[in-house]
Structures are given as C-alpha cells and as structure tokens.
Image (tube, rainbow, N blue to C red; front, top):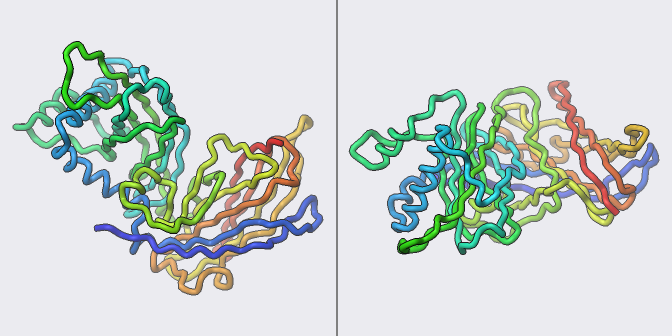
Length: 375
C-alpha cells in the first residue's frame, strides 16, 4: 500500500541572535515541519516498496540486465564468503549516512556514495546493495546460486536487497536509501559497468568495485527523548512538483514529497553563506502537542582552546507555535530546521551545542555538531 506524507511548513523569521550576550537583530531561519507518516508517502515507505518490487522486476528484465544482476550477486556472495577480495577497478567510498525514524519500527537510512566516475567507461552503471544482519547466519554461496537456478527452495531473503541501473553523474556522487530494523549490519555496495545488449567475443571484463560498510542502526521507537542524525545542509528548499516514486528513489533527502534537504559534503561554509541543520525530535507523547524548547550556542576553536562565541534565540515547539492540526496521534513528527547567516563568523572551526528540553517530562538532551567557516 502506498502512503502519502502530509507536510506542514511554518517558517519564522526575524528571530533574535545574541553575540557574546549582546542582542543584535539577525535573520535566523527556524521552521516546524509536521509529517503525517501514517497517511503519507514517505521516503522510507518508497524505499521499502521499491525493495519489495525489485525482486519481481528482476524476473522481467532483459537478458543483458539479468547477466549484470547475476554477476553482481555472485560477486557479493564470493566476497562475503571470503572466496575473493573486493575488486577495486572502480573505487567507491562511503561518503556518509543519516538515521531517521521510518515506518513500522524500522529506521530510514539515506546514504551517499563517492564513486570515481573517471574509472567508468560504459554509459550505464549497475548498482547492487545488500544488507546482512550480523546476528543472522549467512547462507552458503553455493546454496544461494542453486536456489536462484530454480528447482530449489526460494533464495534467502536479506533485510535489504536492491539492484538499480542508472547513468553515473560526472561528480560520482550517488545518494540512495535503505530501510532496516534496529541492529548491526554488514552492507555490501557492489557496482559494475553495464554490459552490452549482446555479449561480444573477446570482450574485456567489465570494471567493478565493491565496498563493505558496517552499520549500527539505532532504535527510535522508545519513549526516551532522542533525535535523528542531524543533517548539516547547504540548502533546504520546498518542492513545487511532487516526485515520482522512481525519482524519490534517487533523491532520498526529499522528505514528505515537498522538502528537499541538500546535505553538506564536508561541513564547510563561506562567510557569505548560511549554516543549516535539520533533525527530528523523538520520544514525545502518543497524542496531542509537544512543549519542546531547543537552545543553540556556538563555540569557536582557537590555538588556546575553545571559547564561547555566540548563541541564537531558542526555538519553541508548543501549542502556540505549531499548526493547529498538529497531533502525534495522527502520526505527525516534530522536525526542526535551524539556520543562521555566517557573516559575523570569523573564518575558523566551530562547535554548535544544542540542548533539547521536553518541558512536559522535564527531560533534557544535549548534542553537538562541528563545522568550518571559510572566508
């Protein structure tokens, strides 16, 4: 069943920015996003749906695609079993990921790969992603291949098992997503140049690459105060046209089908730009509205150590600031978007400390993020 997110974005401008205790007028972007996860099409639901449909689609693919699929599956089977080293014809690195609460107790995991596009000569790329739980015994590769040839029990079902074909962008940056239950996993990322429609005699082997990444997936279903992985971003922008499921698959940092977050690749910002951070707050009541305050303070790293630099006016999320129809019972989630212009920040390294206070329970949570300002 396809579910569609409903999204409410309420911007607030003209907040007060305080530098070293002095109140100065600065534009601080704050926003509240209510996401109706139970009645909407979220990136997490799209990811789960595509993963389920992928296995059926594989049976209908062309023979060339089937050969690519078989080659990638066999490659991962062999590397996972220690029968061969991971190929490195196409260098691929894990550029980063984030954890966000998903549907039905799972965690939504958008991630980004850094692929050396200069090593890929073919016009198309085949990408295979497999997640294997560290607490489950892996099937023997020989048995797995027998299962895929038929006349055998069904092939083993992995927590995540997805194949995609696409043209690799020139910068080599590729973002995709997974949905996994809390726990520890080995994630295999395998890619290869897409094969020709018809095999050719004396055809050189297609270039390939494989990355093995360990993930410890957190559990966001508890009642303790918590947050998603903060996303330090270069842009947060509304979308005027909803994405198709396939476009959403290639753009996992579009949330609610209406808000695009562009993660910063290196957390470096110009003084002419703006520091942006996005995260969700969890552990709220089962119904009604929250009463949450978030305070931000900035600390500059110097040769003599760290010193306090400035702070922003707290964000307030309560009945007077949230949309009238916000209700946790309807599946809404609390999302904070915080932004501050960097014009007054000297070039250097900074730490932003932010404290979330749940006034209903009295609980507090303090987190930190680091970034760099360049002139």
